[in-house]
Structures are given as structure tokens and as C-alpha cells.
Image (cartoon, rainbow, N blue to C red; front, side, top):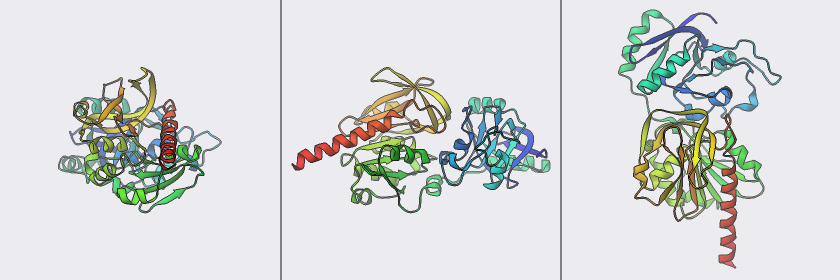
Length: 366
């Protein structure tokens, strides 16, 4: 538990700490998340695929790990960085320690480092490539390797379901396109009586519409939206046919399908309690967020989209709606887990939109 491990960056800097988790060393883009709780949901969020996650909160693992709070079956991040990892958690639901969980899923990590310093570095320089090293003699060569490394951009195909499956409900039928969904999206829809059919990221509009859904939802997911052009074409085929709701990566793909552009943020939004303003009501919601790309506000001007929400910290686009069709999206996570539930009402808004559309269809066919 107290063997040395190094965290090295492509800029040549390094941090010395202690081994945590797996002995299988990895590299990836290093990011930080600001949540004070919810480390288990964070680690199992597919949107972190291929990334090394730095926790700014200084103590991680104090309430242990349980089987029920995972947001995916298998975590797909590349590593974790913490100030202190609790070895002896205290919670009646706990089944294993943080370190034991990392070992079980073969995730390397490092503890005993100054995570606030790392966060400041990322905020100043932007996201960087980083790697774990256990042998001090390999530090310099690893840094050189990082400088010349380009990570594969195949995150969405890696985490998306390979075949459709149904999470049963008794009322409205929703097709959820899986780009790396969090399980709580399905839970929120099921709680509102929806039958949810989860389909792969590359499912065509024709295949989706054959299922006669009352609505289509696009999930969150990792990576660059420009790498998922197959979904952009699918969205064009379903808009106007059924109500539509996009979350995070789904929001970005919705925007791209209408001619807007995305850009990579300097260090992204990751964590809880990010304030977002609803431009229609003026109300502020505290939100859970996890994204490294955003939609260029200027590129929306000549589209059929309207900005509905903005981030108060940096003014970036956080919500969109179509001017003429029953379609909207948000950049943040209304399903939370972890984070505040201020934006849970957006699921109710989607339900209402689907019910209104069904009523119109009944009138049309009467």
C-alpha cells in the first residue's frame, strides 16, 4: 500500500506518491472532478473512458464501495489520483474498500499526492497526457513516450451496448441511444413508467423508428462528438418524427446535426454544483457535469436551434431547443448520481412532450 508510484506528465513534471489499485500501469488524458461525494458513481461513469481522474476532494473511499451504486457494469477510466484513499471504510452498505475495487477492475491509481496542485496545473495548461510509473528509472523515457503518443478516438464504440435490450415499463416507449449511458438515466425513465429500449450508438434512424417509440433519448458518453458522425445522420432522420431529448454528448450531437460546431474546452466541466441559468425563467440550477467539449454559441445563430441554458461560471452553452420541433437537450446531467437533483424536472418535461405528441396523433387519426 505504501510502495512508491510516480505520476508523470507530458510537460516533464512528475508527482511522487504511493501505489493504489492495479499493478497494470496505464496512460491517458488527465482531468479533475470537483465532487465532494459520489466517487463510486464517478469512477463508473462511462464518460471518463480512457481518462485519468483526479479527485480534488482530499479523502476518497471513506464510505466504501457497494454493488448498487455503479453507473455502468465495468468502469472504463484509465486511472485515479487521490490525496488520501481510506483503507477502512465505515458504512453499513460497504462491501469493499476503494483500493480493493480498483484492484478488482484492474484500475491503477496513486495516492499521497497534492491533488490541488495537479488541478491548478490542469486549469493553467489545459488537459494533459499523463502516465503512471513504478520504476524511477523509467520516468524520463515515459515522459518522452507521452510527448509522442496519440490516444485512439474509439471511446463510444468501446462503451456502447453491442445489442439492443429492454428495461421494462408499462406506459410510454422510449428508445435510449447508448453512447456510454449512465444507468440512472434508465432508472429515472423507468420511475416515470417508461419502457426503455437501449440500442447501440450506430443504430440507424430507420431501425429506431421501426420500434414505434413515443420518444428518443440520446445519452451521455465520452470523447469528441465529431467522432460520432453516424449518430449525426441518425438524429437528422428522427427529428420531427418523435419527441427528442439529448443529454451531454447527446446534446452536442443534436447541435451538430443542425449545423452547429463543437470545440474542445481547456479543462472542461466535471463534478457537482455547477450553476446553470435557465434563460426563459431566470432560475439558477446547481448541476452535475462531465464534459470536455462544448458547443460554439456563435455557430448556433444560423440554425433552427435556440439557446435555453448557459453556464454561469464561463458562459458556455448548457441547453438547446429546436425552434419548430419537439426536441431539446442539455449539456449537464439531470439524472445526477452523483450531484444535485435540481434538474430532475427535465425528465418530466420529456414525458409531457411525449404525451402531448401522442394526443396530437390521436386527434389527427380521429
